[in-house]
Every structure is written in structure tokens, then in C-alpha cells.
Length: 80
Image (cartoon, rainbow, N blue to C red; front, side, top):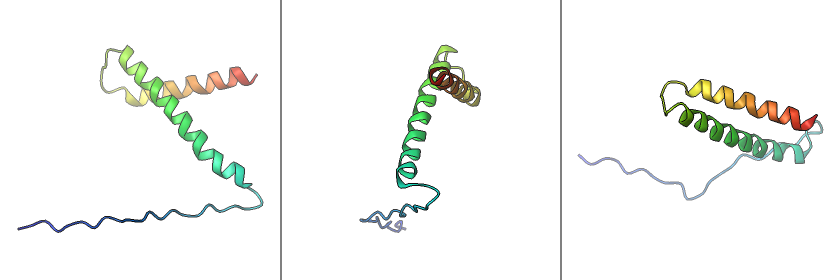
């Protein structure tokens, strides 16, 4: 019995960005990029913590939260 073939979409449709008077277009487009950059920094630091522990499994959430705290603290100290 053959598996049914899946159709692949040739075109990718994205949702339009809604711009209101409360949120200017520049803010709407930069926020996801900034958040993705922060998530990348957190992920890198969390991996460093995982390696420093000797690659011991089961602490991924702890590592992520600690990395997030460190990033926020460093942002506060540079903003002050």
C-alpha cells in the first residue's frame, strides 16, 4: 500500500502587519527581530551553562531562566 503523496505549497502566504495609531509601523517591525535576538543570546548562554555543568541533562529550564536573568541584569546595568 503506497503512502499518499503530500502536496508542497509553492507559494508562502504571510499575514499582513496591522498598523494602528497606537503602534507605529517601525515599532511593530522591530519588536519580533529584537525578541529573536534576545532569545538567541539566552539560548547561547543556557547552552554554556549546560556545558559548564558537564552536559548533565534535566536542567534545561533552570539554565534558560538563569540565562534570561543574566541578560536582563546586564541590560539594566548598561542602561543605568
